[in-house]
Amino acid sequence: MIELKDISVIFNQKNRQITAVTDVDLTIEKGDVYGIVGYSGAGKSTLVRVINLLQRPTTGNVIVDGVEFTTLKPKELREKRKNIGMIFQHFNLMDSRTIFENVDFSLKYAGKKKAERQKKVAELLELVGLADKVNAYPSQLSGGQKQRVAIARALANDPEILLCDEATSALDPKTTLQILALLKELNKKLGLTIVLITHEMQVVKEICNKVAVMEDGQVIEHGDSVQIFSKPEQPLTKDFIRTATHVDQALETILGHQKFSKIAEDEWLVELSYVGEQTGQPIIAELLEHYQVITNILYGNVEIIQEVPLGSLVVTLKGALDNRQRALTYLKEQGVNVTIIKEATQGGQSK
Image 1 (cartoon, rainbow, N blue to C red):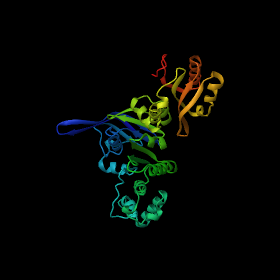
Image 2 (cartoon, rainbow, N blue to C red):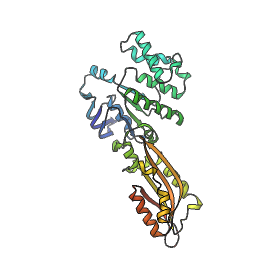
Image 3 (tube, rainbow, N blue to C red):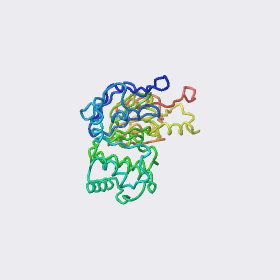
Image 4 (cartoon, rainbow, N blue to C red):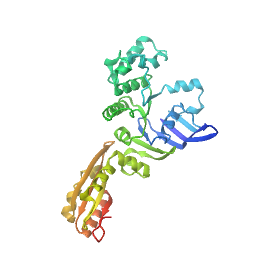
């Protein structure tokens, strides 16, 4: 559906060049909910604006549904853009117009008759759960309701692609989940291809089936969401994921507690992570029964990414050294990723 080839964007400012995007290649399939994640200044918003040529790339090709956008004449480009809806962080609603008039705005200039437009607006507001707000004004709505209006407006011309630029950043956590659930529903019901720009891996975790991570204008890692969450390769990706799954926060709390500041000679502090069916295996019970290793669970979490469970545990393993080593071998054989966080030296001091 969307193919970006060798995309670079360079801005000229006061006799100097600023490179916002460098040599990016991305392929987004029809029906994907594709997350592009990165910190502020990573170039992700510039990249998403390249897709509908609101930002023309300095170099590279933008191919949408088989059409090379960079070669289109202005009139042809305007026509193709109707197939791409866009929503923003701050809604961009017209305060002096009713909710009906905000959604009707793009239809009005598409040459549709009034009766046809009224029917379409009613259907869209019903779709986003705002059928009763047709005569309200933006000032009378909550942030989540305003974003629903913005989504309805973006869908007015029946696009196949929806671009979301930090669409949930201005919303509280509960409202964010509601908007993400709506986008997920629209993806399934309408077959929308969604490109979602965010600095929050939590957002990606909720609805994206694929993800690209950007840093300093480059895509440093991309792939299937389960793959990225279970086996991140780049330090920034690992940082994003551990923040979203709260593992680092849990470790900081544990290591800062007086009880765990020192580890006994026959003990390890260990982090375990595992994917899919492994989360249903009684591995903890196996460690005691077969290896005489006592496991004390200090933190546990299971995330569901694209219907696949990803588990994280922070535990202490207590027992004879040989037994602990054999227990670790068993865990790895079961596909569990094992990281020893803390262990004691021979003198009994932690390291």
